[in-house]
Every structure is written in C-alpha cells, then in structure tokens.
Amino acid sequence: MTILKSISLWILLVALILTGCSAAKRFQKDLENSSIQTDYFQGISVVEAQTGKKIIDVQGNKYFTPASNVKIFTLYASQRFLGDSVPSFNYRISGDSLIVRGAADPMFFNDTLHNRSLNFLKNNSFKIYLVDEKLDDQVYGPGWSWEDFEMDFMPEKSVMPLYGNRVQIAGKTDQLIVVPRLFQERVSVVDHLNAGRDKDNNDFYVKKTQGELIKNIPFKTSNQLTADLLGEELGVKVTLLSETDDKAFKPFYEVSYDALYEKMMKESDNFIAEQLLLQVARKVTGSYNSKKAIAFVLDSCLTGIPQKPRWVDGSGLSRYNLMTPQSIVYLLRRMYREIPHERLFSYFAFGGEEGTLKNNYSGMPYIRAKSGTLSNNYCLSGYLTTKKGKVLVFSIMNNHYQGSSTARKTEIARLLKRLYEEL
Image (cartoon, rainbow, N blue to C red; front, side):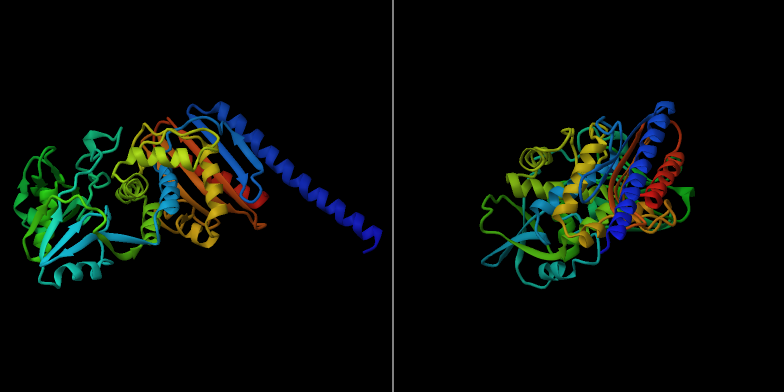
C-alpha cells in the first residue's frame, strides 16, 4: 500500500469516527433539551452492544416505573437457572398409585402442546393423587391493584395451575360455553353487571344484553379445586395427599422453555412471567417464593449492576418496581454477551411485526424490543441494528405523562429511526 493511499484511508476513518461522534453529540444535546421541556419524566440510555460505549445518556441513572420491562429480568433469571424443557409436573409411582406434584407450569391445560403429558395421566389404571403442596408466597404480587382481580391479565399464582387459572366464557348469553366445565353452573346471566366474578368466590356473571362474547376471567385457586379440575379432565377421582419427599419424584418434560420465553416476551404474558419466577425460586431456594428468587438473583448474579433495582415481581404489574435505563441496558448487554444472538433476538418482538409491537413501529424490523405499559407510563427496551450493521442496546423510559401512550410511541419511533440511519 502506498503512503498516499494509507493517508487517504486514515483520513476517511477519522472522518467516519468524527461523523459518528458528532451524531451522538447531537442526539445527546437534542434529548437533553427535550427532556427539560417535557412535563413528564424521561430517561434514556443507549450503548454499543459490542463495546459498551455510551451513545446517549439522559437521566439514565434515575429510577422509573418499568412496567413489563421487568420481564427482561425474569427472562435473564430463567435463562440462567432453568433448563431446556419445562416440567409439566413431577410424579412418582407407588404400587397402584400415581402421585402428581405441581411444577408451576403456567401452560398445562392451557395450550395444545401438552398432549403427551395429558395422555400419560389419562392412559393408565393407577389411582391418582395430587400432592397438597402450599405456595410459599401470596397469590398476588406486592403492589398489584386489587380491583383487577377479575381481569384476564392478573390470574393468581399457584403450584399447579390449570387452564392458566382462568375460566373462559364464550358464546351468546342463552348458550354459553364454559371452560373448564366444572364452572358451568357457577355462571349466571344477569341484567346489571358486565362479565366478571365475585371477589371472594368463584361465582361468575355475564350481562344478558352483552351478546356474543369471549371472556377470560381468573378463578380463585385452591389445591382442592386443582384436584377437582384435574379429575374432571381425566375422568377419575383425584385425591389430595400430604407428601414431603421431594427426592422420590421425577419430572415429566414436554414443552421447551424457549416457547414460554417467546410468549412471555412477545405477548407480555404476565402469568407466564410470574410462574417462571416461581420456578426459579424453587430451583435456587427450594421454595416457591418470588421474593427469595429475586434476592438470590440480585445477590449472586447482578452485583455489578449500575443502580440496584427495586424488583418485586416477575411481570411488572406492580408499581413498587423501580429500575433505571442504565440498569436495564446493563442486563440487556449482559444477555447479548451470554446468549447466542439469534436465540436471544427470537425472544423479543420485531418492530411493526409481532406481539405488543405489531401495531407500532411500522417498517422498523431492525428493532427487537420489550415494551412496558401501565397507565401514564410507557417504556421500551431492547436491541437496534443500524443501517451499517452496528448493534445498539437501548432503554427508553417515560413516566407520569397524561393521556395515552400514542405520543410517546411516536417520539420513540422517531428517535430509533434516527439512530438506525445515522449511526
């Protein structure tokens, strides 16, 4: 290579570096000015995935309500401590008895993927017993809104959930189809209430004039109810049994964890998130207790996080959760280094194409991200691949604005598009 060519290449390289730097500085200045003028709280952190180099940081060290961005932490904990396949349940055979123990699988009787597990329980001549195991936790997370007890996004947590701990009521009010069938006689058609449930028992209501509907309403859980529901599905009596010997049980595997992770992240499934955190707790502490799982993960895996989060549940339903953009970016970048990229990106929704991002960020398949929404709060965190092929990690958090999240989504889309085109 001639000296002249070498000098030319160096000039080009320096020009490219300066262009990138100046673009980052423009972003930073623009966002700082914008943040001062807003009447709500905004925090942004953007870094290069490979090097960790800071691109943007505007109040990135401040705490925000993350909403479903908490599921990124649940994903990390699950990836770190759970295996490849989900135990549908644990079991042991003793003489003519098949003893089943729950494994906190959120999807049993709640999808079409558990056929082998169901057939294993159905196609035998054993007497079936269910271990009467208590949840070492509250059925709701701390800070959840009590008035949402009948909303489909807030089922109770349990050791052996069935049907996603929800009853589905479908059809016209004069010919309702109820699943599970056990609740058929507990559904009343009334004049004065929309579809819902009594707070303290499993009595359900549908308004007479509601017409055709599909409604999923959480039911109140108990181990006896689980035994009854299991028995109804299997066509046999299932008896509760006190049992303490963990070692004698073995898991029955069928569904991959990747399938759960994708559904949790792309559809923002709260129930899957909570049950996964219970599984992590069981794995690392021996008990189904979300608080213990969170403490273990923070103390053993995330001691280097920039600002220690207040992390209280698996789903982000709680407003007690507090996290910073820098901490979320730290975790996303850590996963980027630890998990094969193709697999990692498959968990996150593509902009404008999938899940909670399907109706937003149109024409932006270069972002793979997790949204987080509570009233007056909207956050988006994930990965962006620029036009030049550089991967950026970002977290954008907006709290305490009035009105809908539409304007926030528009602003975020504008910023992400600029990052894509200019860096």
